[in-house]
Every structure is written in C-alpha cells, then in structure tokens.
Image (cartoon, rainbow, N blue to C red; front, side, top):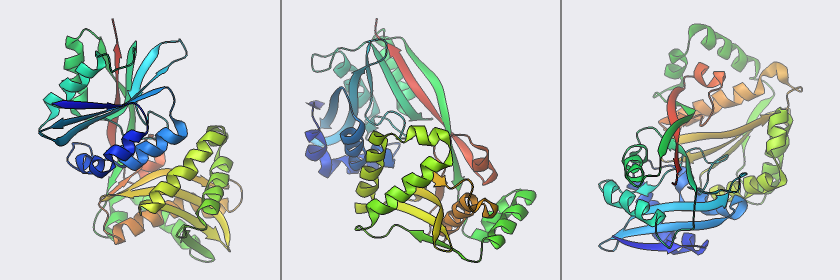
Length: 334
C-alpha cells in the first residue's frame, strides 16, 4: 500500500479525477463525501491542519482518509473528518469494497506516524450504521491502546419511494392521509411551486432561502451566521453547477411563502434544510404542502429514496420515514 499525504486544499484538485470514482466503489456512497462537497466545506468552514491521506495499491486509488486536526475548548488536539459536523449528514473514510482491512490498517498507521499532526483524541462523527469503521477500525485502534468508544449520535429518517404518488398516499396512516389531502386541496389555487433554475439568479434565490430559513425559528436564525451564509451560497453554487441542487419555493400569489433546499444524488433526494414565514400564509401549511409536492415530484422523476437527513422530527415519520442510525467513533490517545 502506497500512501500520499496532502496537507493543503491542493489535495482536492490533485485527486478530483479519481475521488468520486472511488466513492462509487465504496460501502457508503454519499453526496457529503464527494470531492466537491469536501472541498467546498473546507474552503468555507475548515480550520486547523488538514490531512488528506490517499492510499493506492498497484497504482489504483483504493482509499481516502479526509481528516483535519484542531484544538477543542480544552486545548486538546482532536482529529475529525473533513465536514464534521453541523452541515454534512453522512461521513466516513472512503474505502473501495474488498480493501477494508488494508486501507483502515493504513489509516491507523498514519495516525501514529510523523506525517500526522500530534493529537490527543479522535471524534469521527456521522458514521452510518453498518460501516466497517465502527467495527474493523474500532478493533485496529483498540489494539493501539487508544480507548475507542462508539456513541449513538442521531437518526436519518429515510423514505423508500413507491412507483406512484397514489401508492405513496396509501402508505400513510389513514388520518394523516386525509389531513394531507385536505391541505393539498386547500393550497391548489393561487399557489405555484418554482425552482432555482438560473445561474444568474442563483445568489438571489439563495438569499430568499436564507431569509425564510432565518424567519422560521430563533434556532435557525442563530445558526445562520455570516460564515454559515457564505457556506450555503458556496455549496448551492457548487451543487447547481453539477446538476445536484433542488432549491424549491412555494409561492402564494407571487410571494415566496416556504422553501426547501434539497440535493439530488444517485437515486435519492436529500432534504437538507427549509424555511418559511411562520405567520403569513400559515393557514395554507405551505411548508408541508411544498414538501409533499417534492415527494410527488421525486416519484414522478424515478427517484427511489427520499432522505430526510438528520433529526428525528415527528413530521418525518408521519410522511413515512424509517430510521437509519448514525454513530460517532471517539478515541483517547494514551
């Protein structure tokens, strides 16, 4: 196994031609581990020292460990995945299927090498259940005496889409279905659903999204710092350029009342964040109506998965979501 350690964002350009191909051969192919997502996250939110470890066997790229090391509130140097944690819902090492043992062994060896910054702890977040990182890598670092611990972190309710919208409605609880149909009928007049489809207008559309998102709740307003707003603009542009952005608005008589910022990847729609005016047009339930219309659109376009992403909010289950569990792998260096 040959390792090349990158310590600057030049890693993303150097590996761009191979990165996503490796991801497609891995156990957990997800948007949040694509080269574009990782590069954008680091440019907008990264801090500390980055280390992207590329592992090759016979000249072929078989593993990427996208890591960074920074100080926590207690002054300890902590290693984490690039993307961890607030805005990247699924993360992991990128490992070609069939190469798990040698790649994860190489990552453990890197962590004790001179090429790795000194560190006191690991905090590897947002690892999907079933990942070899939670079992095999756990055993490897346990053998090093680094005291690993797997901690439940969150759930991602995921809806498996049927072949028709009518079939989807029949999947719902009877009371929920009737209430939803009533809301859809009520919002059938003077209501339009539009999408950000112009590169020239994208910045203004993202500003409208941010305005509605921050109006939704005090928590969302506090989350949307100037730095986070820059990230949302950057990631929307990066995903738009790759045909992966679904930024939707529900408009009432031409006024934008609700919005969803989603992404499309492979056979899935990823429900990333939302916003609405909590006072105006509340009688129309614009957020719920828009979300259900996006489920209808996803079915019509042949998507197989509607992923609500992190958070166990009740509405996700009412709309058919089933939990995928996420874990954090922690470790303390002796």
